[in-house]
Length: 377
Ligand code: PLP
Image (cartoon, rainbow, N blue to C red; front, side):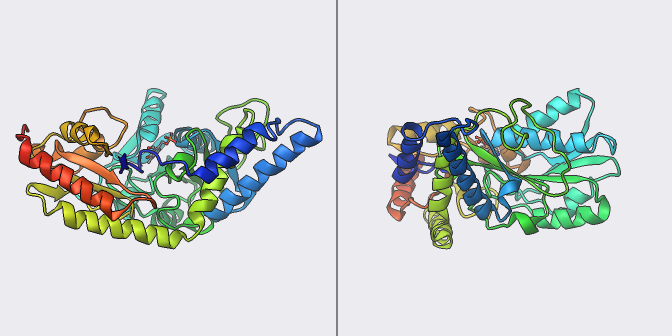
């Protein structure tokens, strides 16, 4: 299999699976248990927290394990609007967020909140000014993703944070950094966001684990899951110790020579652009600069057919994002491309393991699709 869909999920390295196996079969105890094996499990989870915190650039006590990026996004939004419930019921976000944000905002609109959705320009870019212009006195929360999952555009979170300090210092800032963590270097300490959401399975960890950074401006954050008081009372539920161990191991592996890995992905992306744009009717869609995501369009050829054709040859790519099954995605729509171009958008995403040979095979398969299938759009 040629796997070029690392923005959807990533392969789990052997070392991660081994560490999880050990956690499942070795000390499987509940970290809340009073006996020694329970405290050992707790110590191990705390060591994992320290590993993730180091990669995020913050203190371990600011990191809370969750089950996924979706949970973190929902938690951050709910916690922020709870803290600012007396400030107002206005939220600023963008039209190109992940559905985890957009559908949570939709729910909040049903609950009486007003949400301003800022649209990017036709390159998929957003400036801090575009976001700050939408902020009002009653804005409880600004939520802007760090890297767009379909286009790879990087958004100016640090600049938004600085601008918010001037425009409305009480407004809290959340960033969905699910596609930014270990792809676009940042440090939680200096970024200025109050909440940073990350997900393990985008960086070599298993599915089912994520983490939330909560900064010092958040007072008594409201738990999304009240219960037995795990995660310092903020995220109840018995710790998923094996997932947490896998997450920390994956982070440790990724952080080893991270710069080399990011350079490798950026080089591959440049190589892929070179190879793919040599195919007639193929254009780069969106101008994302994140090293791991490339969005292109085979203008006139439906993306779903390309994905299926490539899949039959063992090549995995996605039509826009993996999350919207066949419909033109809300992100691609934001680019306002002509219909034939919008219908042909595919996303190719790379990992540290991706090779040039795989890109060559991808390019050959797309060229063949172009040459042998009639355009239908
Ligand atoms: N946010 C972004 C930008 C994503 O790309 C994804 C997953 O694709 C999510 C949130 C959801 O993360 P999870 O799959 O861990 O719930």
